[in-house]
Image 1 (cartoon, rainbow, N blue to C red):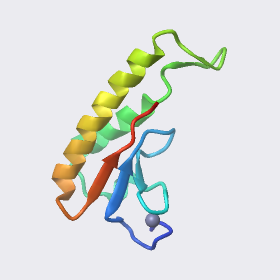
Image 2 (image 1 turned 45 degrees about the horizontal axis):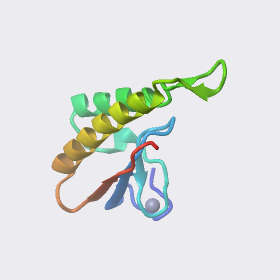
Image 3 (image 1 turned 180 degrees about the vertical axis):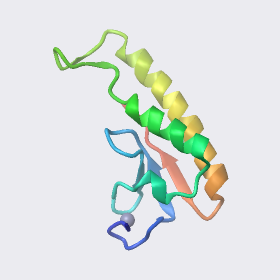
Length: 103
Ligand SMILES: [Zn+2]
């Protein structure tokens, strides 16, 4: 599967958690399939777990953020930044990878 720019793996990537696989094309914002990346399995698992944790700061009963939401979000962003650095190392310097933190 390729993004709207026609690349299987675009050179410009964004890492952002949002109820989906957490890697996006940096040009067309297409949601890329994690399995298309030739990344080590443990890193793929960490990325999946990390994206599944997205939204843990929202109380679905009330649809509002928990009182400790800011702490949870900053912890989530710290992990996301570390995982982005690992992706950078794995994919090499031909890729521009930006981490987009949850606000
Ligand atoms: Zn694209």
